[in-house]
Amino acid sequence: MSDAQTIAVEIVGIEQVTPLIKHFKLAPVGGGNLPVFSGGSHIIVVMQGTERLHKNPYSLLGSPQQLDTYEIGVRRMEESRGGSHFMHDAVKVGSRLEIAHPVNLFGLDKIARKHVLIAGGIGITPFLAQLEDLHGGGVPYELHYSVRSTEHAAFLQRLRQREGDRIHMYYDSEGQTIPFEPLLASQPLGTHVYVCGPAGMITHVIATAQFCGWPDSHIHWEQFSAPPVGDAFEVFLARSKISVHVPPDQSLLESIEAAGVEVPYLCRGGVCGFCHTRVLELDGTLVHNDHFLSDADKAKSKSIMPCVSRAQCKRLVLDL
Amino acid sequence: MLVTGIKSKPVYAPLQADLRGRYHLMLGMDAGAAPLLRVIAEMRAASAQSVMNTRVLLVPGAPAAVEQFTAAAVGDVQAFPGTPALLEQFRAILGQSLMGTRLYVAGPESFIGLVMKIALEFNLNKDEIRAEESGTLARRVYCIHCRATTENVRTNIVRCVDCDTWLLVRDHYSRRLAAYMGVMVDAEAPGELPPLKEVFL
Image 1 (cartoon, one colour):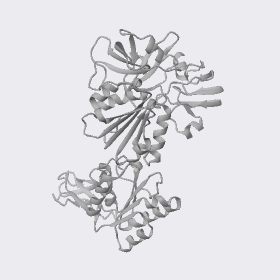
Image 2 (image 1 turned 90 degrees about the horizontal axis):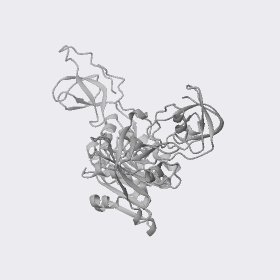
Image 3 (image 1 turned 45 degrees about the vertical axis):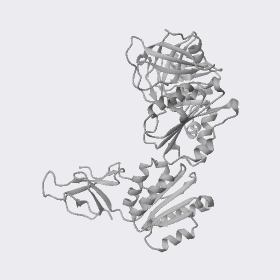
Image 4 (image 1 turned 180 degrees about the vertical axis):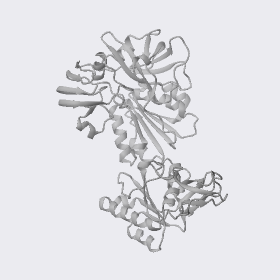
């Protein structure tokens, strides 16, 4: 994917839906329709910040039937590298942004006999679009949605109106937690579980489902990692024959792009595997932060996902 | 026409216990009893509870087979006079089963196919099912012309049980139909048939 393929959009609506989450509506500049998408898809939003370009993935939360606008929900991250703060502080109605075409890495299993959706906080966003696909489809489904407190329950009214008692709410402030084990131990054969939320919740759902005997093919999850900060390091791109400096608060992928070398990517969050890059030489260790490579592959240090992973080394040579 | 070397032909592997499963459902026919008993022994070595959580549905080749399972102290054993009765019970059990169930199938290839067809309807995936061939390779052959299925086919060509067409038996397999595709063999040159050979024994 390159920036030549982005779509120019204008912000046509902004609503503060919780103390931390803003809801944005994006319409194509010049009118018309945006590309079709399926529930669970995300877009990359390209933001020209004051110091650098931000490219963040956000799930599309609107109806896949309605293509004149896209809707996204952006949570203000405390330890933001700038993207979510830019969306919250600098973007106004009328602002123009670039977005990449939607990609779905979190699709529903079309032949499931039942769907169990588990959301934590801002993790609700991909499910809003998936519920549009599920609604009236004849396959049973239920949503378990956990938030800090009532004021943090983003989009709840919209969910309640449409889904009624299919929505099960859990408020941390009331000491309520999703009963993961009883829930996952009692599902009929052919059920699929989907989880999106904080890392701890995802890990817990996967582990609990496996404990209850679920096979991996029925467990689905999505978590976009923001590229973690780390030590600065130097990388040499063997095919381009250039050296690139990676500062502490910039990702390897961003640094390579800033040097004018294009790397294919889809999610920029360590999920899709698209930016998979071969490591040719390494004097030190790789800091793998992705959810794509297996532990065995991470240990081999023969490849890296530059969108979120870094290195602690004297020398790193990549096949780029 | 491509007859062999077709990817859809199912490939089976020796059964192994999958102790990550919480419930185990085993289906066997004739010589398929032996691989199932082997898995139960393997399970017992690791977890006696898994054996208790195991249910066996069997079309026994010999009456003694049922006793072998009873002696192995599995949770439940049921014997059936034939495949249709077993499949009916299998379907009823799947309708009440929970996530966490693993399926083990052993027997003739056509038996495995019929079991898999129902498992597919319940959205069981490859990582929930294990199957081992044990017994005849005789095929169910689906006539792509009249849609009838001819059972117990052991030969490279066969007359369709319904429309009498001579069919070439291909390796092209449909999981949904649990049958190999049979295609009119003398369409280009009527009456010219390849030699009849027994190949699926």
